[in-house]
Image 1: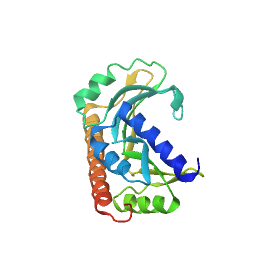
Image 2: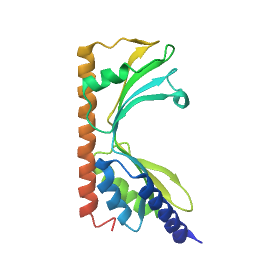
Image 3: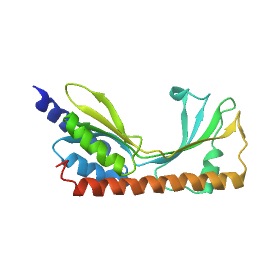
Image 4: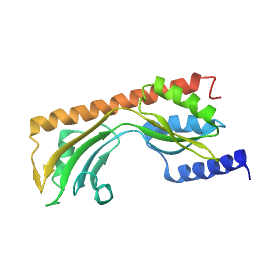
Length: 196
């Protein structure tokens, strides 16, 4: 199997995995559109999320424990309830808001450039080529919206309720902004002649 045949075999496997695992509702239409093009397929995606995470220290991702995860707007009450489940007497508790992210395998460098141009024009300014191999070109589509806020340490919450109101509202704003960019990218792909 050579070039195009390898790409098509990998695409079949990725689509089978997607059928089994599914995707976030807010990104499913975009994924379906991208995967409908001959020269693209998605390998992973997230529509954006708000998370409450416990970590021993900054950079210790492998030891991180998700306390709560939402792929939608969240209320202060939900965050407070999740904070109450945190039991790590030594670690740190962080509230994070993360932008949408997609990894898209492209059949050629030219197709990758076309997709990148549309993604960046749609507001995904942190997008770029992650890798280039004989099989494919991997594009990461990502935006600038991100917030990482420490809210507790050593089992003690040090975030006041008024401040929590503020950071939850900012997290929700970032989610909505990411959703808006996903819609713009969908429309750009749907109407573009360059990716077809």
